[in-house]
Length: 191
Image (cartoon, rainbow, N blue to C red):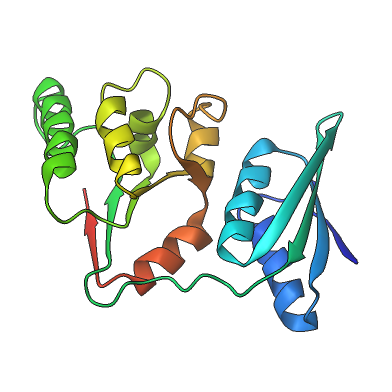
């Protein structure tokens, strides 16, 4: 088994170095040591999409993330119909903050009723306030997740706003995840 000591590394480097090692060496089993919960969540998402099982142990703020490749990576994309929506703010449009918050709430509710749903909703920058504790759009996001939409919040953004322990729905991702999803998408919409 290969081991990577990724303590002190910023997101998404632990994930990227793990992927590079697995790709370069053909290793089917890797232990990555990290020192923050966001890196653990990123590694779990990577494992799910890369055909790996994951086992995590924690002791004194240090996590050992044990990955074992058991299958093939999940292929992103869904033909030309694959849609990713990137939400970079908790308000829709510029001008009145109150109106912007109401418009965003209405947009996400309308999305639950739309016949075509996106594959992924990516929350970045102040958009992460919509996927964390106290969000006024939790009911809409729950309905979208139930309909099969991936809800992913930016780990670096959660850290910046000190919200890493307040994720209310979905998973935590990183820029590599987002680039992969957007590049494979038939269409990407940014709000």
